[in-house]
Amino acid sequence: MSDWEEDEDSCGGAISVQRAAESSPWAPQTRHRGDWSEPPCRRPEQRGWDREGGHCQRSEFRRRDTGRDPMPSPLCFRLDSSVVGQVIGRGGCKIRELEEASSSRIKIVKEEYDSLIKIFGNDEQQSKAKALIDEIVERSERTDCGRGYKDSYSTSSAEVKVQERPVINWTLLRENKEKYEAMKWADMPPIQKAFYKEAASIASMSEEEVTKWRRENNNIICNDLKEGQKRPIPNPVRSFQDAFETFQEVMDALKTAGFQRPTPIQSQAWPIILQGLDLIGIAQTGTGKTLAYLLPGFIHLDLQPIPRNEREGPGMLVLAPTRELALQVKAECSKYRYKGFTSICIYGGGDRKNQINVVTKGVDIVIATPGRLHDLQMNNFVTLKSITYLVLDEADRMLDMGFEPQIMKILIDIRPDRQTVMTSATWPEGVRRLAKSYLKDPMMVYVGTLDLAAVNTVEQRVLVIAEEEKRSFTLHFIDSLKPQDKVIIFVGKKL
Image (tube, rainbow, N blue to C red; front, side, top):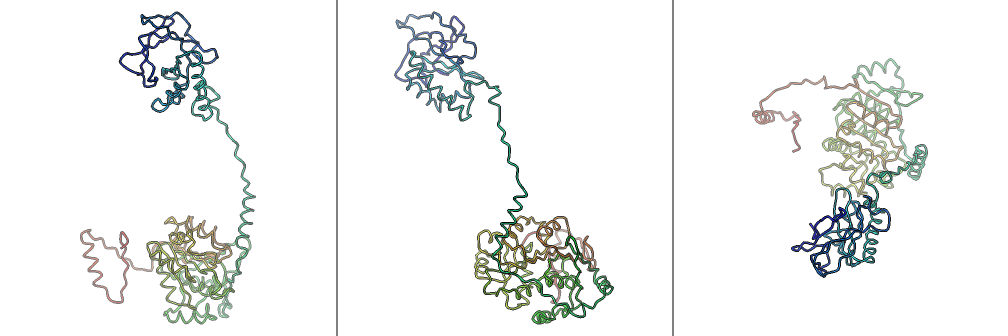
């Protein structure tokens, strides 16, 4: 409440009477009024101030026996309630500033939609106070903070200008993308991808022999995914000698490892990869897919026209979904030690500082999980422009784990004319989309069927054990293992 009380004048207008016990928080402290009655409101000469029709008329006002002359009529007008707060200011600071600047007194009677403003003082003081309030209202309208004297429901305040969005020229964007990509890779050195020399025994195989051999080896099926004219499918190799007879170091490494003959996926994948073609290999886990892409990768790195000491970074990249699989690939890679190639395994949860130190010194092969590799890529710790041989291992699992955004960002920095090998245990829609986006005219090799299920060549036994007996049973089972036995234990969390 202010120090003004409402009373009724002869024309029904509200007049304010000062309370004796209270002082107005907005009134100047140097001015005091006695017990006097407020004269009726005086309408301003300007139009549009009193939207209610101007019921406040000049009339004779009552004088009390105070011995003082009557006050001049107040200047009355209405403001939208949304603007009143700016006139008052925080804690009444703005209205006190207006009163001091105009030497007038301002009273505000708040109502639901608009408020009655009364300015007390002589004509000059009232005009100055009104001009100051007008400035506040104009600023409010310019900043769209209030509507001032406008009707709350006016059409103009509700109008919204909708700007037409420019039409996107997708054809021009695609053309520019191709142009900028060509500029980005214009200075890259050439790469060599074809190294296969078909053995005479393989070249002489008839079509019936090839079909029979594929059917007898877990029903190997090959498709050429190139649009338009199809290419001939290379005949499968039946021995390591058929595939690597011109690469003696590979033969020595295989002999040292103790392998007898290639697996079905290897026998068909090696001729395709060594011809420099992109490959999609679909086979169950544990069928030799890792060696199917590692050995051709070694040959690819060794026979590039740019010497190893002049390359800007690694030449081979293997992306794996988990650190366990990445470490397994790293172990296989280290087992053969072909031509002294160096490799590093980059994965989350490992020593990041040590990984950065190794990769910045220079390596030939990077085996990584997408998350950690993307981290090093974004911080410029690893250069991917030198990659010419890319492997997406277990692509279906990487998509299931949500790594597709990281894979897309990684491949942006790898040259588009690379050779790419993708392996997967299944062939869902997501893997097909990934293959279509990042492989160029690939061939697909799958063993058995694309609707893969559990391995039917392994005997499986299921033991249902009570929760309280699991630990003791597991310990007893491990103690009973022989030195040559192997076991895989799946747990609920990483150890």
